[in-house]
Amino acid sequence: MGSTAEPTGPPPAWFGRAWSWFRGLPVAGQVLVWAAAWPVLAALYLLSAARPSAGRVGGAAALLLLVTPVWAGAITSLGGESEPGAAPEVVAEPEPEPEAPSPDTTPSSVGGDLEVHYLDVGQGDATLLLHDEVAVLVDAGRWQSSGLVPMLRARGVEALDLVVITHPHADHIGQFDQVMDAFPVDEVWWSGSVTTSQTFERAVAALERSDAAYEEPRVGDQATLGPLDIEVVNPPAGVGLSDLHDAGVSLRVTYGEVRLLFTGDNEAATERRMTSDSAAMIDADILQLGHHGSSTSTTASFLSAVDPTLAIYSAGANNSYGHPAPEVVDRVLASDIELYGTDVHGTILVTTDGAGWSVATEASGQVEAAPSNPPSNSSPETSTAGGACTGDQVDINAADRDQLQRIDQIGPARLEDIITQGVACVG
Image: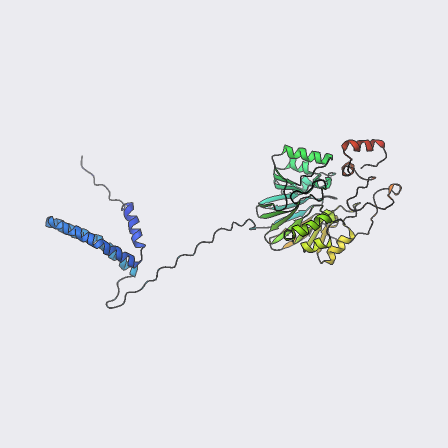
């Protein structure tokens, strides 16, 4: 069987690496390599002198083949042969290519629009922050309705990354159980306060049924959800939990350069503490007025510290509490702050690209200060001598079961005793 010549194939890998290394050297480096290699090659040639003339010829040819690439590389690096008598052309080393900018890994990098829906849930609170990357719900509306889940679905919500319950009063936690049963929820933030209402018990049961993680955040805690940076500005660590408003979770959400502040039902004492201890964390462009615009909240010093351009409150139309309080409305408007309310405008949509924002409302109108001491929804025969209830007081003649249970010492069992007496009018 005849022999078959093996294909020569490409040069061995070591040769390619060596040649690439040599070509990467500056001209001076190439000359030094050549100068160092010449004696070795010359010695090899002289050793071949002991061989027949054919060996010397082969040695000379090998020497020529090995030395020629060195000179070729040097000539190539110099840009060709120099004219006789001309000074060799000096070739500057190439400028290093600028480093490619590293990808922006800043959590607050924004893209697209953030929609903030201040939902019209009557005399209660529910706000949806919606972005292509994240969905956050702050509070869950009042207990006497089942409209929140349809509202969320109508806005394309399929899952919620975070649900924040500022505090467990029935007008903030009312439909929490419905939300938890309707959507996958990654995480729930809760102040840690408890009540004895049936609404609260339903909420706890829904939380236990879910797979959501549970946290009780405190001042200084931070989280990044998609393009949203979230800072907790209340309550501080070690706060007492018996005062549900004072222990309520307050948040500042930052999207790009736009900051939004949510304070639940924080009242004057809590605002003073926040202004003193967390002043750098409450400065915001958009403020949701505390406690539905109640006179117990949005003090002048707090409003000055926040220094918002836009203010929004959530309240039911013609509510019996007189929300928003006339003095709060006057204070906000006198500060040249644009004011919207769900009792006047329905659901309010703020859309921001991280630099500016626009406002769209379901209904047109203008927030005006309501008359002081608005009429109560109780009958003349049962009105108190002091007039209508104000602030966060409970009108026992018109309150429903959950409202009555906000009064100390009135739990489910005591409530049933009161009802069976037939004296109190319970909604």
